Image (cartoon, rainbow, N blue to C red; front, side, top):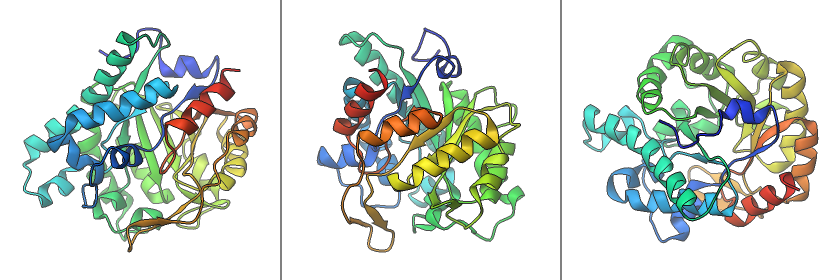
Length: 307
C-alpha cells in the first residue's frame, strides 16, 4: 500500500511538475531537536518518531507532493556503531517509510486533496561515514563493494513499498553504477540524483558521463541533482534532459555552504522562487529543496509550478 491512490509518480511526471519537500534536518532543528551526532536525523527514528511525522506534515501542508524519508543516514553499519542490532535497524528503515506515509494520511485528513507520494531516501556511502566524504566521493571502494553496501538497505526500503527510491547526493560515477545495479529487480522505481560542483560531479567527473549511466536504466524515472548550490542547477537540468531524455529532478540547498569538519553552515541563501521557472522550462519535473530550504520556499515552488 502506498500513500497515493491516484496513479504512480512516474505517471504524474508525464503530465506536469511535482513538488518535492525541503530539508528534513532544518525542520527538525527548528523544532528544537539536536542532530549533532553521526546518525543525524536518523537518530530520531528510534527516539522521536512523532517529530519526523510532524516535519513531513509541515512540508505537505506547505505544498509538497512528495516526502523524502529520514533514512538518508540510516544504514546497518551506522546503526551498528550505536549498538543497534541488524533486525532493529531494518525495522527503523521500514519505519522511515511508514512515518512519511502517516504524514500523508494526516495531510489528507486535514483537507489536502492532491495526490501525495513517499520517496525512500538512500544516501551515499559517505553519509554513513559522517565525515563529509559524501561531498568528495572516491572512497577507495570498488563498484562491487559499494553495491554490496547498498543492496541490503535498498531491499528493506523497497519492501516497505515506497512510491520511489531516492538515490540521492551521489558524489561520483562509481557509486552511481553501484546504486543502479543494486536497484535492479526490486520492483520499485528510483530517481538518481548527483551532488555536483559546477558542471561536474563532486568527484570531478563530467555530468554528461554521469547522467548517461541512467539513460537506459528502466528502473530510473528521473535523473538530476541535489544538495548543490542553486546556481549549479540550470546547466545540470539542460545536460540531464539532453543526455537521458528522462524527467529531471532538482532539489538544491539554500546556497549556504556546509563545513563537514566544523559541522556548520556558512554564507547566505541564494535560493529564490524565480529560479524555479527556468528549471521547469529546461525539463525539471521534480522540484524541491535540500539542506536549509524550508516550508516557506516549498510554498513558493508550489505556487510557481501550479500557476
